[in-house]
Image 1 (cartoon, rainbow, N blue to C red):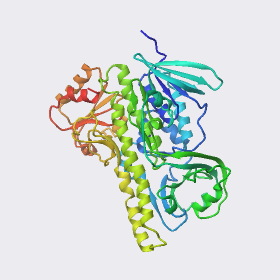
Image 2: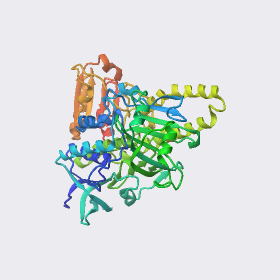
Image 3: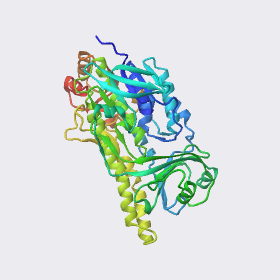
Image 4: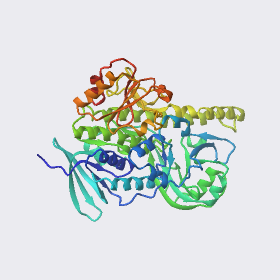
Length: 527
C-alpha cells in the first residue's frame, strides 16, 4: 500500500487554511500546511469577525487568544456608521449592527486585524501534533491520481520538496494554484474597479470622530462613486486606521495625493502618516465547483469579492468548518458515499447568494439611491429617503442567515433552497444553524455538543432515542445523546428530537413519534 506523508495537504496558511488545519487536527487527521509567508502580513484586512465565526473559534480552542489580541476593548463597541457626502456631514445612521442577531448565536462577535487572528490560529496549530507547518514554502505544482495527490513546493532559498497526501485543499487566495490545477472554472461579475488600500496613523482623525461613540468602521457614500464605498476602519482605538475606496485607473503611489483624498472624504483637515499604500482589483468571482476528485478549494480560492459587510474571512472559515468534518468522516470511514461531494453542493450556493443578495445588492441599491436622491436638488425628498434607509438596516442583518435547506444531507426541508437569505429563529429547522439555549444544568447546549453528531432528546420517547443510538452504532457514526426536559427555553426549538451535525447545523428536527432513525442518520452522513 502506498505511504502518504499526511492525510491532507493544505496549500495556504492564512486564516482559512489554519482554521481547516485545526478542524482536521482536532479530529485526528494528519495535515501538512504549506504557507509562503514566514509571518502574518501586517495588513489590517478581514477585521470584522461574526458571532458565527467566534463559535468556530470557541470550538477550535482559540477564542480566548483571539479576544485577548483585539486592540478594541469590549466597552468601546464595534458598531458601524454610514454617512453621505463626507464623514462629518449632516447625514449618517448606524449601520450593520450585528448585535441585533446576537441572541441566535453562542458567542459575541469580535473585531481585530487579520494578522492578529492569524497569529492566534498559528499558535493553536502549533499545539496540535497532527499538523505539520511549512512556513516559507510556496506550492509550484499540484497533481492528483487515483491514490492521492502530490504537491511540489519550493522554499524561499530555493530548496524543493514534494508532499504526498490523500487530499489537497487550496486555501491559496484569489489566484489559486490548486483551483487552476484542478481545472475548476469561475463565474465573474462585471463589478470591477481599481481599489486603493491605505493604512495610516492619525491622532487628529481619532479626535474628529470621537463623538461617534462605539463606532469602529465608517462607510461614506458619494454620488461620484455610483454605488461603491469609501470605507474607514479602526485598527485600534488610538491612531491607526485603514481605508479603501475606488481610485482612477492608472493611479499609483506617486501620481495621486492620498492625503488630500482622505481629507475630502472626512470633510476636514487632519494629520496623516502612511504606513502602507497598496492596490487591488474589486471583483466578484465564484468557482463553479469547490472540488474535483481529491482536490478542493476554500476561502478566497473559491470566492472573491469586495470587502463589503465582512463576508470574506467569515465565509471562508465556514467553508473550513463544513469541509473539515466531512473530510475527517471520509478518512475515518464513517462517511456516506456523497458526504464529501456535499461540501461544494452546500457551500457554493451560499456564496452565490451572498454575492447576489447582499454584496452586489448593496452596490446596486446604493447606486439607485444616489441617482434618485440628491440633497442639493430636493432636500426634503433626500432626508425622507435617507431616514427610510436607516430604518431598514436591521432587516439586512436579520435576513443574512446562510442555510442548507436544499441540501441532500438534511431531512424535513422539502422544496427548500440552499443560500444566504433566511431569517433568524430559535426554532430548530433542518438545514439551519442551531440557536443556543440553556440546559437545565445551566450550561449552554453548545458547551455540550459532541465532536460528531449530537442528538438533542428533550422529553423524547426513550424508544426513539434508542433507535438513533442503534443506527449510529451500526454504522460507526460518532453520536452523543443529550437528554433533558422539554421545558423553559428548550421549548423554543419546537422539537423534542433534534439531530445536530458536527458543524452545529440541524440535520433533522421533529416531534414525530418513532421516526425512521436509520434513514435519517444515513441521509445526514451522506447516504
